[in-house]
Length: 111
Length: 124
Image (cartoon, rainbow over all chains, first blue to last red; front, side, top):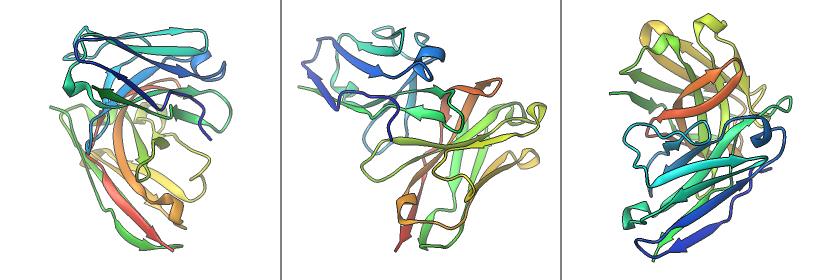
């Protein structure tokens, strides 16, 4: 069971902008912070965005996040070939017995 | 530099047990919550469970899929996290990551550092 829904794939050319959506419900995104993770091929996930729209040190400002209601969005502008990866959203689901939840993942292809 | 290094993965038969370890360094280990997250081959991320810090009585929570079979523990004197996995099933086959977690109350806000993962394969 997936609590957070993402598009399976998105693509854009270098230099362009891409938006990845993450749809949830009141019990998860609606009442908790959202984080975003980048997983390059063969590597562990890496934190890109936390608490909806904050960037850890070292993450460039061409990457941004936002949240509205029960959905969240990751925006990447000025796409680079090195951005090609799978992106996951994550949050906490307050439903009893659920806990941490992740999105289904979105494969970003830089054409 | 924060480092998390998992070990203990391998091949185990269905119904068997395995214990994973995660050695941490580069941060004040005893002050932080830690989680296990897994990823089945070619699939997405799945939260397995977490342990809070001493100040929060080392309380643990688990995903429904592993509750009653998996146990998370930690040894702050060794900066180590453990995952005891019993009654393993084929669907438990995955890469298991340990992740440093930022928590407020019972809620995990985010996973800020991840280990490289260790592969567990359960044969049926």
